[in-house]
Amino acid sequence: MIMIITLRESAMLDDFFVRAILAGVGLALTTGPLGCFIIWRRMAYFGDTIAHSALLGVALSLLFRFNLTLAVFGVAATVSILLLLLQKRQALSADALLGILSHATLAIGLVMVAFMSWVRIDLIAFLFGDILAVSKSDIAVIWGGGIFVVAAIVWLWRPLLASTVNPELAEAEGLQPERARLFFMLLMAVVIAIAMKIVGIMLITSLLIIPAAAARRFSPTPEIMAVLASLIGAVAVVGGLFGSLTYDTPSGPSIVVAALILFIFSLLPRLGRRQAQGQGT
Amino acid sequence: MLSPANTGAKPLVSLNNVGIRRNGRWLVRGVDFSVSPGEIVTLIGPNGSGKSTSAKAAIGVLKPDEGTVERLSGLKVGYVPQKLAVDWTLPLTVRRLMTLTGPLADKEMMAALESAGMAHMRDAEVQHLSGGEFQRALMARAIARKPDLLVLDEPVQGVDFSGEIALYDLIKQIRNTTGCGILLISHDLHVVMAETDTVICLNGHVCCRGTPQTVSQSPEYVRLFGSRAAQTLAVYSHHHDHTHLPDGRVQHADGSVTDHCHSEDGHHHNHDHSHDHGHDHKHEHEHNGHNDHDHHPAGERHA
Image 1 (cartoon, rainbow over the protein chains, first blue to last red):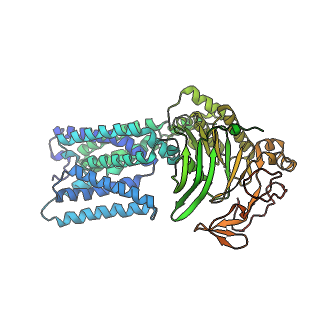
Image 2: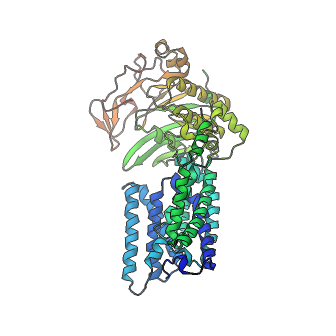
């Protein structure tokens, strides 16, 4: 595995930089709409938990010499469904359950990796991403998976949005919110499996949440917010990568910092809210 | 007064001996009622008596653990839930709220908003609406779907008295113009909408049922609430003399405990005339408003 390399050490604007931008933008377009639902439904901690479980997937894939992306998806999907089932029993609060699963899966993953003395892996690359190492096949996975996820979100849009406002209302009016929720969690698992290589386990949720939060102020409808979140995410990826090139900083964290800067900018002008309030009486 | 419910149409939904239990405790048990086209059924009862639970069972949100719920196939439900909090992060205008669960033609959307008096607020974000405005927006959303069955869970909560009368007028108008069945949950134990065809009092089971019409015409009631209110609201006065223990048994006022409550256990009605309850009630001929009835046992609390 390659350590996080900074751009200055390598050839400027080489092929890999274009690949990194393609991969990052593809991921950002996917995480936009998904991230909106994460913040509307207050599932930020859920996203973190699923992301942390990805390390267990990495360990299992190394142990059984199984495809990495599929192993991460498998573990993330299992943890999501486990959460759904445990929440239904209402023995522990959702918050406490997330706290347990989040750190348990991360710790088990780390312990398993430590036991496998025959493999040498670069943990930092998994935890914080290695976008400059993406291959052409990685890009195919990101765009293929991304198109699948966005198509599924469009298909599930109405039941997902209605059950975000009120699950019982969605159920009463025939929209099957439970099914939508299950699909949504599986989509989260897909995105985490394809995002892990790019921004890493620790930073995946930031790419989901920060662009969506930055889009809120400029969005009059949920649909516009989803599209804006994608665009803001794409700008953050490009900005972060160029920042990493200019200032010789690690790429994954640079993307998150760029997203954060956009979010802070979105807070500064108090335009969006005023206009919306002007409509009321 | 001949209500549309008397036309003998097939019920939209009927609950037969429905029971729902959670964590080993029966929330409701033995619930029987039905809603027919054009009928207004009002559920009343103390907090935690299973009004919302029964309504959710009626529309299929909760599955009954015993008994059956029959709905007409293809029944279109419009639902106004009791609690609905829209997170600030979700940009939702009244206009967007209208198409939340299904597409809607502009003309129908505006007609529904106008009938609920919310047309001027169509571009406002729902987070900026007052309690009454939000309730009316939710009602507009539910009626715009042209439902066969409209289920309203405490639609007048957080609405002042005149707003309450306006909302009841709207509900009456919806019933009269669309002929849909309406299942209404009242937040007040004693005051129900005058147009109600059937009042069902729940306290973990169906305590009693009847019509409120005559009560609303009583002079005492008109004196208490004014003639305008009397056209809209009615007192359904009664009191309970037993409580339901967590294990499903029933404790009576005299301290005895039985497995079930029986119709003759006494849900004493104070209606000023007798209507057929199907079981033996004591009619005490006193209808002094809703403030002076003793509720026992003392465990019952009313807001």
